[in-house]
Length: 272
Image (cartoon, rainbow, N blue to C red; front, side, top):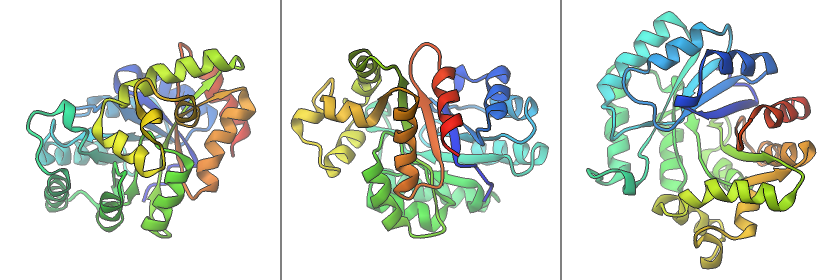
């Protein structure tokens, strides 16, 4: 498995360009995760890798309903040939509300992984978006590990127990650098609110002990404060470190707000 480093950045694929990637690398981030279901031939990955020297680029995630496995395998082989060991193919089933042709996601993931394997994509260079126990076990059995999104340190602790030792666990964590609690929470809530309309995320939050009052849009303070940690540099760094302490190998930081760099710089200085 490629070394992702302890810290990565989660960024929408349309918001990631050469300048962003080079700055991320200069700050010491090991991996740039491309969110928003980057599709097509993943040409953006070639561009970002070409602009950097050691940064890893990962899809977080490629939606299996939008791009077939053979196309994904072709993109993987092309990128791997040009930039050996610097690309990780993250895949996932997305969510029911965004997909008209949505069958049993577990079976679809298995079928997709079967095709990737047949096409020569090594399991060591793939990861799986995984929330529940069944898909976490699939990630451990069939890929390098799991990339959970919109989770808590408690989920990370439970996921590590399921995955066992030696399996990659790379959760995403939202942060807001703002010492004004009300303003920071409002920024976090604006993003969290979207996901509270999606069954898979809400079901996972319920498994973690959040109740109706927490997961009803736009989300309780208790929920927002853990999903989008806000405060000064020490506070947001502590939110990231909590995942590492709970068993994560790597944390993909999503900095919310107009300018992500102050938060990313604060975390890079405090989490090693």
